[in-house]
Image (cartoon, rainbow, N blue to C red; front, side, top):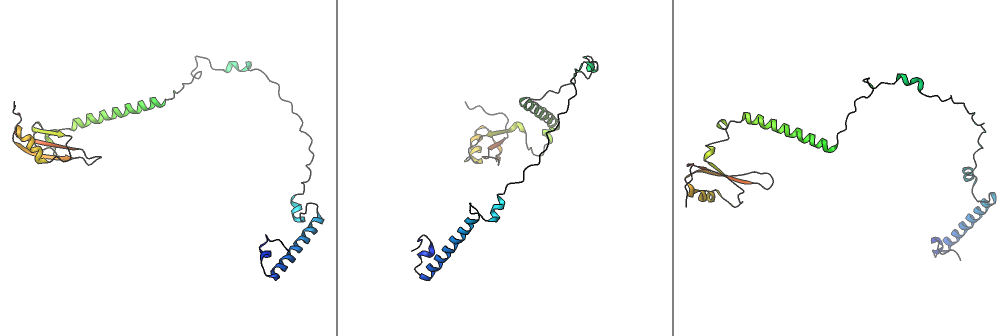
Length: 194
């Protein structure tokens, strides 16, 4: 018979079972010998790990030192700053709140934008701009066009009001592509169709 939980004991080969039994007996004898050396059954190498440390060396308690006696500050009052002295109250820098900081930055941006706009206005000369062709008073701008709108349809719509010199559709390629158109007319005055 043997321990059938052991894989070697489940083996049907008799030689393997006999060798396993012999090995088990040797292990049990070795454990008994170890148990005789110390009640816990630990080996000498392991017992060294659990040995107590040597006792601490006795040191006499430290002697108490006497503190110097406490005195008042009356003898130093004459060296204090007076209210008239500049050192009496140094200026306290006021902290800036986050809302104040945002308002300050916003104001700086507004001022910078106004300065830039004034500078651009001084430089602006519509008569010498190379990108402008024709008279701006004879040009109509049509905004918010449908994407299916064509130049011929715009020309057909505005042909009622007078002869048209040129029609163009422009689109801005940002986002959804806003579209607008310009219509250059020959006639400034529009006819009243009433």
